[in-house]
Length: 511
Image (tube, rainbow, N blue to C red):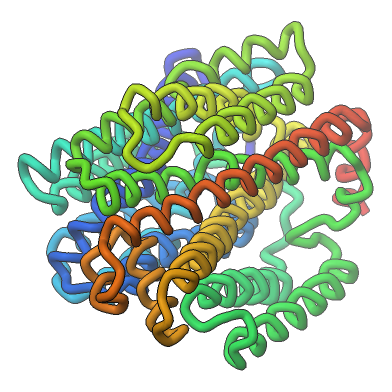
């Protein structure tokens, strides 16, 4: 297929289409987080079912990104992007009419499938439109588009819920997806990897099974415990699938994942960077709205306004980060940003339940400012470490690391918060461990009344204080993880030239 020559207007419109599609991803995540309590009440959902509103989307999104990237390179980036946008629009619209919680969670899983196609197809297509520094700046615009969804998702959700109801949130997402569809269908040219000889289906299936089963096992831990037979069986199955995937990838001519890339510190550093925002930022997008609305009693609109302090910096600063690469190295920008975020997390851990909005705004703003710098550079770095023809693979690897990491991080952090809350509640009550665990599960989903039913001898205010103590400990743990990750980024991200990695991959493709 002869490469299409884009004019300036076409490049701008293609970038706009991908950016609009990118807006819908975090909007679908943050807006739903604000709506979790009200959706749970309207659909009579259990705490576990409420958790799966987020988990179902993250599970399928993260598990299928690698496959979607491979499909983009082999069958066409535009084709995968357009198909994904159509599926995303249809599944989002379907959520507005679903009344059964099981079906609702299933539709969220379908949204994740479509989102994987949108993200991998769109990002790999964009890598064909821009080159060199222009590519990094283009991807920084995509990062800012995520910032728009993150910044306006909470406040838009709060306003919409109070004025029209939560169903309109998903109609808004549907409309944005349709706009991206129309622009992409008209102006995006088809492209694929000319060296592609088909999909590595054996690798794709074993990898998807390994990651999907592992993520599902982690998501089951808060409900069943780590030593539950089903959880253990799932972890063993995931390990065996991963081993099978590695053996397959070492033998096929054109693997879905080129394992030789992991010899290069720079490539490894990019993958580590992908997982960094999960613990410093993404988990807070779900935990804080639940705390503000469910535990502290804020309105959805007030909680949405407060969340802007956390996500608002992503509107502008990712673009700033792209321009700063003219003078500062990516490792300096990304590592420093993570250290700033760690400082914000530490600050937030010292604010008790009931703190004013003004008190909460400043540490949340510091976290958002810090995370904006790696956020604006990550996607451009991901495609800079492989040849342009394999941009779909690079996007798939990076996005899988990031999104699957976010899903796993959210599951682990939720399980940890539940365990910490149960520990504090256990010291206050002599009731059965199961009652304490059930009460903790209700608390972390913002259902104080439900927690009181399991521990009627403890006042609601005391339950909230136990949750607060657990939340502070959790923030300190996240501070330590973010600080450690910053150190790793400083060490790895600038080691090894990009050209060395690209040449190694190009040699593997030729042979």
